[in-house]
Image (tube, rainbow, N blue to C red; front, top):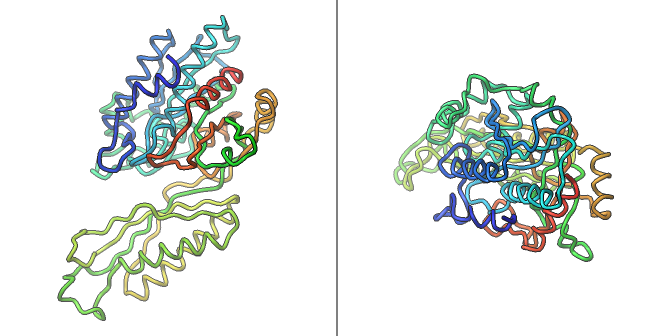
Length: 396
């Protein structure tokens, strides 16, 4: 089956009938169905399946061993996400195995297609959990205690899926086997589409420094109709002020982004002044110092607005990653191998970016003509998907 056929086979799994796109979150019913699909597709190709102690799935072509070549991506999505972010890299990897076998290719080094667990952080709040646990980039106890909106912990979800949470954490044995990792991914922007000739493929250079922060504002819940304006301590006001401050702070730093995409008032009634508001800030920029400075400016604005309204503020850093520069030799070798394709930075985080601190990694981007990602309009044209598989075949 081609990558297009593989993607078509899972097109209905986790379809989000309310928001559009997909709701496929780590260890939920849709993501577990996709994990089963991947295992079945790997078995059809006589690949040996291994689920590591952090819930990542490895499909081996050849006996597992040192200096292995890895490819793959993830199968989960953000809420209302697109069809290609993650699954494209998995489908092209399986397709590449088929194409290599059709040519009579036999790998001289172990080769594995890997599906990483909970890359988007759509359920438990922290992105790239599978790769973070594998590399030791997150404390296992902290990870196990993460909860979803229903109060289910990561440990509970993993246990229900058959992964023992008592053994999560940095996996030296697994890391020692990796010679390099190459992740194919749909481009999350329109840089390729804007280049002369609209090339189908690019090689990644770097990932912006980025993180997530939880802001909690506490005020006084009360009746919307009987409470005088002057008597209110309404946390929604400093929350709104912080959203605006985030836009201003990001606009003041070249290449920075700051986004509030999730806000939860408690108790959430139409005729109720909220007693508290939780919202999450996503901040990114080309350098760690600029990212931290943007967040500091936003936090200061939030504190001022909270004080003015008589509210309390608590800020918690939930995840952070410094600027990632991909392995220069691997990057340049792939660029030349694929015909001097463009090299592009990205503002999006990836498992490849987490692994980059431990093993040589690279990324291939497939053109996205809409430039939209993390939304239903995300797209990669059929011809470009075919080109993605061909690039991955040459790479492997």
